[in-house]
Image (tube, rainbow, N blue to C red; front, side, top):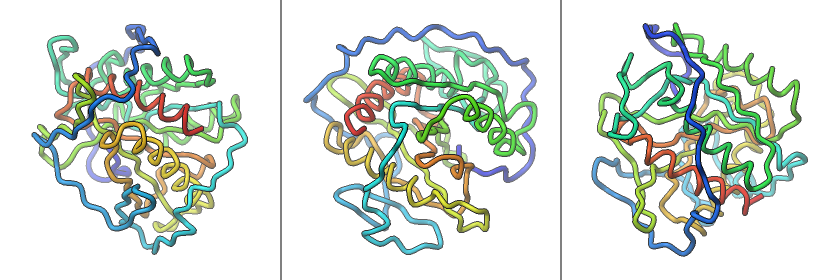
Length: 283
């Protein structure tokens, strides 16, 4: 969820754990040329304000987007190094038979086997099989207090970046829309349901220094162009906002939201093999 530390603190009463089930992923299982459709049930109609070569953008920032700003002519020096971290590490999904857990908040848990951190493990496993070098930081930044998450995650990601040079920095979240707990954006790829994915890009419109925001946007557009080519419908429109979201730390720093509260963890794990393939081909 992309709220930048607004509102009251949310306390979770279960101690943190960093155990996880090792992802079992095989690149040969990533389908190509599969029939793809967006599932409308428990979804929300997409809206957008701008479009660049088929990539839709919902501009909620103070800036007017020009063709030059949206042109994905970004050059990355460290395109095979990737950092994954989580500002809201405790975000979780609708329990399922395979991934059944007891919530300790509003779709939140400190058990990293069931939170968005597990989705990060899956993305890491696929990216590494494609030859990427991945650093996945699983520091819990939203427990015991939700307020201050972005300040804590900034310290965490800067610590990672002090040990690895990377232009690509992904703050992996899950989406939520108000009180609509059954919101479950999905695409059907072949016979598999995969949670839809969404980039959220910040700017300096909120007053914080952010010289990288146009490069961040170009990176998101570059990846989403390839996604539209390989798996059209998997990505929702990019959201551009005034808040910075710590994306000043790198040239290709982004929030990626995987699914929402109504999605199951299975659907979100499924999305990661497609995202990894898309990134590999785009980069």
